[in-house]
Image 1 (cartoon, rainbow, N blue to C red):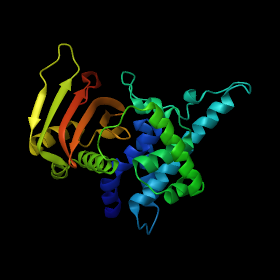
Image 2: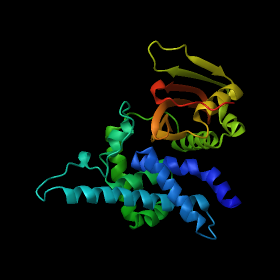
Image 3: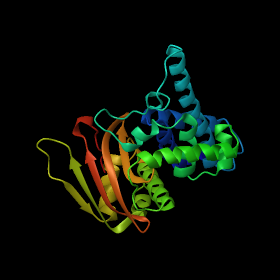
Image 4: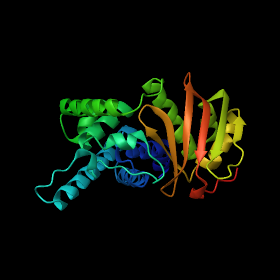
Length: 280
């Protein structure tokens, strides 16, 4: 049980983020992560826990996407042509008041393209491991990812000027530290000169909250983004994070990354979400 708890702390936030990148729904992503850990609890002798969980979560997401496609195809008349962008297997949902480029782009990808693209281009998994998840040869997975990448490149906005591996490392560490309420781990990924600004969408709007330094910024972040909130990456290659509470989006967080650390954090919160911050 101690090993399972340690795995949960180390990998749960990562799995939820992975599921969200494929499914576009934070509730469904959390369900996928829960099921993956349930299966882990019934399995012995796993050498690479994160790799094993990634494969299981990827399969669960792919099954869900394929199931949604099948439900649509069987519910429509035989002579009805289904446009790709309207396929609910590729449909992703977010709060009604928020629209993001990732959500629009993923509608253009088939389930196989989406899974291969996300696992390889976002989470840097080799195609041999993706093949195990998708159930197709590595060469086919490579083609799926290439097609998904081309569609994403054609429709997505210009990505931020941060190397993909650096972006992945920094955001993974940031999300994991928030999920675990670990101030020390969070401060380690913040630049010594970090500063944060918080804006509340209200009329009239209250004054912006500004904090400086790793300790003060980290402490404020954990009040809102710590355990009880779910934080995921908004789009591949973009330093935009989305924060949910009980399935509802309550904040959008933009990171400015420099030299492998976060220099600036801009958070915009929706007061209508009524998310209660944790007491320090």
